[in-house]
Image (cartoon, rainbow, N blue to C red):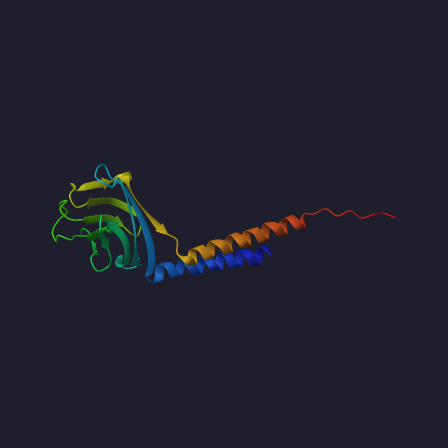
Length: 178
């Protein structure tokens, strides 16, 4: 039983690892920023990217982020590579078309989708000065895909089965001598 469980686990790991690196995958992210000032001290949002680790490219599939009365969608938010030769990307929504001034509800989010690091979030809400959150004040988390959850549940089930089987195999039985 152990050999079967180990073999299935190794095969599942090999299949999931090779599939993740070979083709573009859809990944969901959530972000949280603790801003130093402004009407909203904690800003949260989420987005979904189609990422290709082989070519280090990404495209925006969906966004869930609201500033004041402005709801950002793929129609008014954009994802672009940021800087030459780096893996940073900039996700932004600029209603005034040029920069973040505090006269409109705009944002810039700099991050690396391939290793999950965040650089900064620059944010403005209408009528307030623009603020920037950097370093540990900004976090980015990948949301596990349903397939990853399935693999984890299957793995826990296999481990539980092996442990349960091991307990049964170690039971002591007494025989009566007549």
